Length: 261
Image (cartoon, rainbow, N blue to C red; front, side):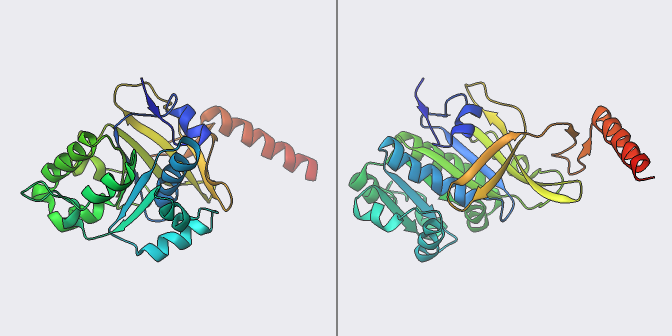
């Protein structure tokens, strides 16, 4: 089966080689979790590593903001646009949806650069425009439209909760409309805030089920690290050490106090 690689080696390993071709991937996380960075890196890596043009659609930011943020990682989006490898589309949510005659704001850029990847930033803003009543139907139509045009998509979704359990994905009915779900989440461990990534769903393929720590590097971009070990309850917001690890830590603390005496 054809795999669409993110170009982030550790993430592609978790995905058993990459996303499935034409799949719609929901990238969910709270504000500041790194969704935009990962999505931009997916597009840029597609162009530079795999020769696949891409489109980045945003309802939230002006193009200048995206260019600036990308430049901080060494990604020259203006140059990629000039080379007809990329299109940044800043628009309102209603224009991304097909009209009654089937026309869409995506028609011309798709014909112009023949992209294989697209990012929609974000579905949360689309939901605010459409309203909850018609949201699932319009998302279904949008996802079907992207797939029919041969596009592998990443759809950003901003979760409302910074810490604790995440329920908004299933509450809005998003989970069954997409093929894969990746969750980015801040977690508190030992009185420090760390970041966790987990693949919640990947239709038609096995995937890594572990929670991986990640960080944003100024030159590398999105970096996935090894799994969290010796901790439980990370996703619930009540992370604590496993009984064995807690016992070892207690013994170490006792031994340290004895040495001090």
